[in-house]
Length: 335
Image (cartoon, rainbow, N blue to C red; front, side, top):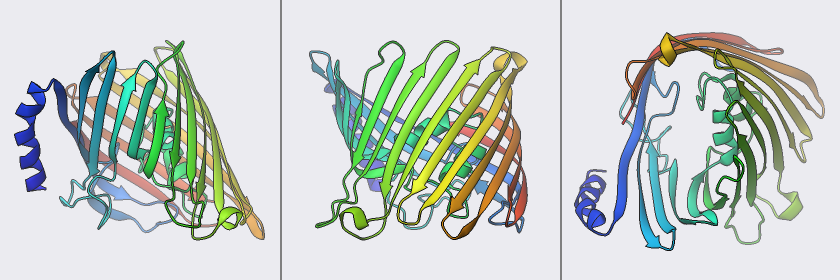
């Protein structure tokens, strides 16, 4: 890591002379308190990392190529602010958040490499708690849900090709395809997201198909997920609602969730209340139907444009299993 930072620091003067803009950025988020979930009901009191956002660092840059075209790169890695360890978990790749290069112009943006999953990014933009994998009821159930009901696939996809359109009438479209790169198999994943963002109303539609495990062609298990969401900003309160559905082939596992929430600004917009609830219902062949209820309420206050403090309480219950309550307070700094 030291060698990487030294190399980048040496490259900056050259990059500036070549009319390339390079940025170093990231966020460190740490919280303390008592955590317990339906899948881990035994409460743990600890200092942990990544409450409202998973702590990360990044380097990105663009170079003007002429004719309105730009080259760009993006390399980002996760780290654990409570211990200083790299990655979200032991032995994770150095740049597992993003590692890609691309071209942008009047046609939009085309990128190659490891790229953030557009469905996960969309889910983080359409709920009161953002991309929090710990405290957002929607993200918890759709991407990290216990009992097998979470959407398969990581928050970032390797070996990907992505196209992102430029905004047209406040609407953008993102399509991503990830190659399995295994001889004789077809473990390729795809995702597509369309977003309309107006002054008050925002609407998101998305889908992805993920194949998992060894196999060939149709024998490879797959899961398809759909999401439809909307938000409406009434200024005094912002409302959120979404519906997700996923079906796992072969195992015939079906799940769907309904999510609703709101944010309420305070202190001239420096603070905000966050409230959200989500119910995931799942039905699988030969398995009794069950549901999971997750609700969260929190308050977030901006001490500055880059630093905020927050507190969250969360309730989590699976109908045929355990339940857990979470009470935490944390701080986040963006750099």
